[in-house]
Image (cartoon, rainbow, N blue to C red):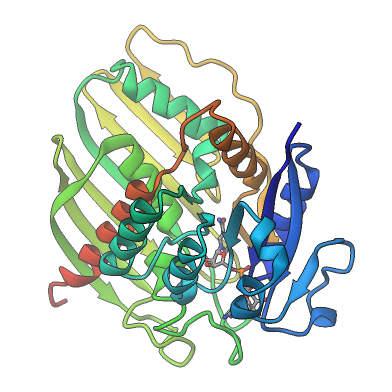
Length: 341
Ligand SMILES: NC(=O)c1ccc[n+]([C@@H]2O[C@H](COP(=O)([O-])OP(=O)(O)OC[C@H]3O[C@@H](n4cnc5c(N)ncnc54)[C@H](O)[C@@H]3O)[C@@H](O)[C@H]2O)c1
């Protein structure tokens, strides 16, 4: 059995999850870990992989020659640059969400990948949660009939415990904004289920983050139409006091109604659909934990399994580069279609 060989760039919270999931996958092997922070500050001593203090040092090394796949888990604003460098070195890449901070950058990544004939895997691991798999099947099988309305509510807490001065969080060029960093998983699920959107109108405001972030918004209401028909809206905020409230999706359709709620869309709260009995779903994995914060469902092992399956010709990519680009495109249009309050 040949093992797929990996490097991980960015060894913070999520980079270490990649490292761990690679190490646990029996068809995978972790060869290199890359981070600009000194090795002893990263908590990566349990991995036998070689540490490099820059992407340039890594790509120039003999170890890089053996690597098949590079997982990019650096801050958002570096994703496109790091992806292009790794594609130039003829590596497949796994890019953490969001794929880039502009559609133009995402296009450059796809263009390069096509040129060097390498795969790009976008990370949207919430697609693997049991409620996501279930609702995807329900919609694709057309049991809901025509989609009339979809409402996404993303109400989380991100305060000064999260936006620290020395962090990339809250910086325009590295973080990009709340839709990119906090809520892109839910925009991805909406795109995956219902397709593209148009006629976007966004209203943004900043209730209590003006001193914490460089963004215009911590909250917003956005309405739109689905290209495939139906109306949609996204209400979001990071101003929720003390802790996350919910990330939910309510679907109003011809043959019934569904609401998926919980902190990260992990619980089916309502399923009332004509001639349909809801099956029992397996429990969703708990959220990735950041001290006081829960992020998205901890499903990264599926991402690594998908990389192995694709490279061994057993499957197609779960979230391909074009889907990664579309999420960036939708978020960019949401930010650009602002109407005054
Ligand atoms: N899929 C998910 O559910 C999920 C959850 C959280 C974060 N993320 C994404 O993962 C990425 C990392 O987030 P995080 O929470 O782990 O952040 P983090 O701050 O914990 O880790 C980022 C790491 O990247 C390193 N880094 C910075 N610049 C670098 C460079 N030029 N080269 C190499 N390393 C560099 C930092 O030193 C740090 O160790 C972000 O893009 C974020 O949006 C995804």
